[in-house]
Image (cartoon, rainbow, N blue to C red; front, side, top):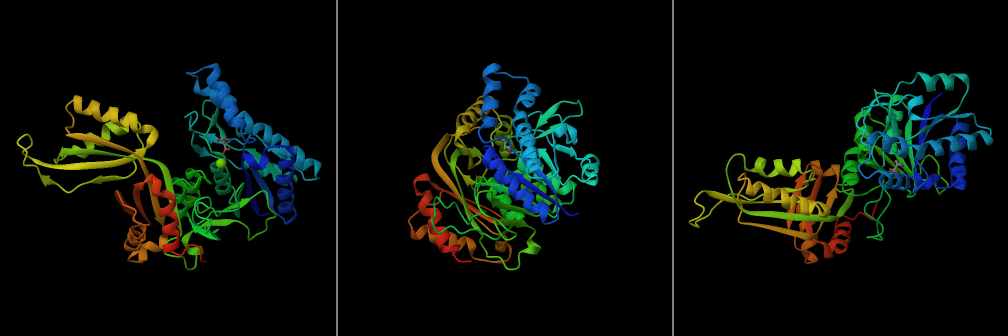
Length: 419
Ligand code: ASP
Ligand code: MG
C-alpha cells in the first residue's frame, strides 16, 4: 500500500479534543488506502515546561539527561494518538525513537539522523496494522541513549520518515493553512501560495517564516520529498495548503514568490581596517569562535587613507548578526584588536535595523528585480543601509521603523497579491 506521512505539531495535539480531531484526519487517509506514518510533537507548551524543569533542577545539566526528560513530551502524544485511533477502529501502534530505531549521532540536544531502518515498522504494516504513530524530535545514539534533534525537530523527523519509507507525500499539519507571500500580520494582502520550490522555502524558512524547521526543508530537497503544509483546524482535502516541491512541478512561477523579513538584526561596522590578505579571516575567525551567526557581509572597495597614521590601503567592513549577539560580537572584536589581530578606528553598532528580502527562483532568468525593489523602497523614502544578493534572493537592511512600510511596498511592487 502507498505510504503517507502525516505530522501534527504541538498546537494540533494540544489537548485530547485536538488529538481526536487529528486522529480523524488520519483515519480518513487510511480509508483512502494509505498506510500512514504519523509523527507527533509534544502537546504545545510541554517541551518548554520540560526544558524549564531541567534547567531549574540543574543549570549546567548533563545533556544526556536533558534529552531523557525533554523527549518524553512526544512519547505521551504518540501513545494517546495511538489509543485514540484504536478507539476509532483503526489499527495503530505507537513507536518511541529507540523502538524503530531512529539512529542518530550522539550530539545531545542537536542530534542528526544516521539511519532509520524500515524493518520493524514494515513488519507491523505486514501484520495488518495501518498506522504507525512515531514520537517526533527524538532518536537513539550509538551508546544506546535517547537523543533529541533540536527545537522544532519533529518536522525533520517527518521528512526523514517520508524519505526512508518512500512516502507519496509528507503532510505537515499546523496552525496556519499554508505558506504565504509574506506575513499576513504585516500585509493584509498576503496570499497563500499553492506551490513553492524547495529553494524558495529554504530562504523563507531561514528568514523567519517560522512554519517549518529549516533542516526539514534541506532534507526534503535532498531526498525530493514532497512536503505539504496545511491546517489541522480546517476541513482539508488533496488540494489544501501549500505544496513545497521541486522546481519541475512548478509550471510558471513568478519572478518573486515572497517577501520575508527579520526584525532582530543588528549592523556592525569596523571603520578603517587594513586592506590586506587575511583581514577578513582575522575578523570573522574570532566571530565564528564566539558563535556569532553572521549573516550579511559587505566589504567596501579599498580606499587610500592619507592620514599619517595609516599609510597603506584601508577599507571598512560591515556585517549583520542577531541583536542578542551584539554584545558578544563587540567583545570578540575588541579582544581581537587587543591581541593585535586586527586594527580599526571605530566600531559602530546599529541595533535598530531590520532585514527585508525578496525571494524567487524566477530571478535566475529575469533581469531588473533589484532595480524594481530599490525603486519601490525609494518611492516610500526608505533608505537602504546594506544590500546583499544571492541567486534567488535580494536582501536589504533598513531602519526597523520602516519594516512594515517596506514589506507592504515590495509586496505591492511585485504584485504578490495576484495569483
Ligand atoms: N516538541 C519539540 C519542540 O517544541 C519538537 C517539535 O515540536 O517539533 O521543539
Ligand atoms: Mg514546529
